[in-house]
Amino acid sequence: QQQVKQSPQSLIVQKGGISIINCAYENTAFDYFPWYQQFPGKGPALLIAIRPDVSEKKEGRFTISFNKSAKQFSLHIMDSQPGDSATYFCAASSEAGSYQLTFGKGTKLSVIP
Amino acid sequence: DVKVTQSSRYLVKRTGEKVFLECVQDMDHENMFWYRQDPGLGLRLIYFSYDVKMKEKGDIPEGYSVSREKKERFSLILESASTNQTSMYLCASTSLRRLGFFYGYTFGSGTRLTVV
Image (cartoon, rainbow over all chains, first blue to last red; front, side):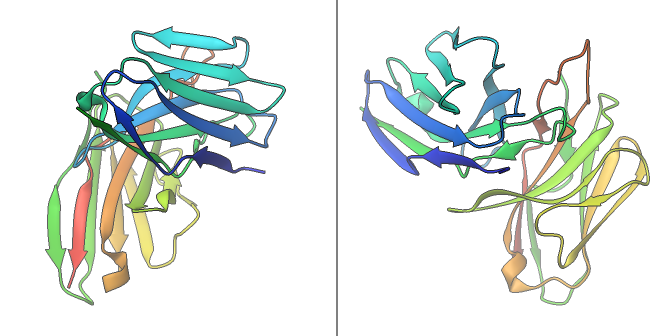
């Protein structure tokens, strides 16, 4: 019940295209859903996060869509650029879980020119 | 900005050695975590700590121990390094709550450990 399932494992997108990464969860107590971006040789860095009281959050080219009833959330990267090539992790946490993050296994995104 | 500093970027150790990985954060965070990252397996939690001298086992604690003598410092110890502990090790910290909200983790840049 603590799992967060992330797909796809890897993704190749043309420059200018839309990258979409999906995550699903089971624990209905989760109330914080962040996405982390990790470049090679670096630690993950918080990219964008959403709470379940909204269905969408947008920051620049990055959008989280959240479907509470389906227990799914996704990251959309519009106008994908080669500089977006990185590994992306979704995660979730709850107050009941002392806010400990449960991570998906990651998606390696490659944006090709 | 919160800073989480891991003392070494790359380490090469011999099998059987005792290895110390150090992590320091500068924002007075209560919570600190050690993860290892392996291709296809994502981030796996080794140990975490909610306070000084407190420690809790994560999902894969075998072969590891931790020490938290000061709030800002969380050390991961490999008691007797083995080749299957070759991995990227990531430290993270967070504050439980500010204004009633949780703001996620801040990660260090990682230590790439190779055990030969």
